[in-house]
Length: 204
Image (cartoon, rainbow, N blue to C red; front, side, top):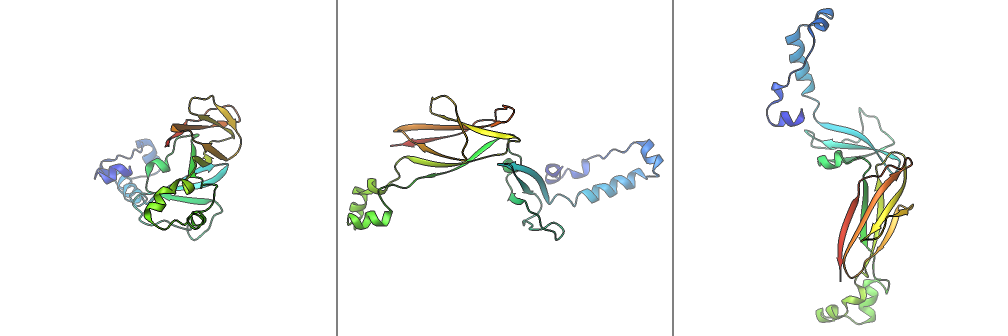
C-alpha cells in the first residue's frame, strides 16, 4: 500500500465491507470507505517488525514517510534494542539467515608506530620497502550472528572443504595465497539448514 501511495495510486485501493455487515452495524459504506482511507493514509511513517539475533529480540524499524527515528513509543521506553533503516532488504531479511562482521587482524610483529621506529622508516621509499613488516598477515576475524529460531550451531566451509560444525560466535579465517572462500550457515535444534552466506577474498 505504501508503494502504491508513492506511485500516486493510493485512492485506487478498495476496502471491502459486505452489505450484510454494513446493514447489521448501520454503516454508510461510502462514508466508511472514505473515512478509513483517510485514517490509514496517516500511518505510513514506519514499519516495525520483531526479529531475533542470537536469541535476543530486536525491533527493526523501516523508515517510510518518516524522516527521523524515534526513541520512545508514546513516551514509553523498552528493553529491546531498535535498528532503524531505510533499506528494505534489511527490514525484510531472509529467514534463518547468518550474518557476519569481519576485520583483517593486525601484524603480530608489532604496532605500526613501533615498526616505524624500530626500522627507522622516515621516507616514502622506506615505507614501501618495509610495508610487509606491518601489513596484515592474512588472518580475518569474523563475528557471527543469526536470526534463526531455535538456533543450535553454525556450520563453516573453507574453500572446497567439507562442512564443519562450529559452536562459537567468533572465527579466525586464515587465508591462503590466491582466492579464498568462506561459507557459513546456521543450524536449528531441529536440524533445519539456513541459507549460505559467503565471502571471497584475494590474498597475495
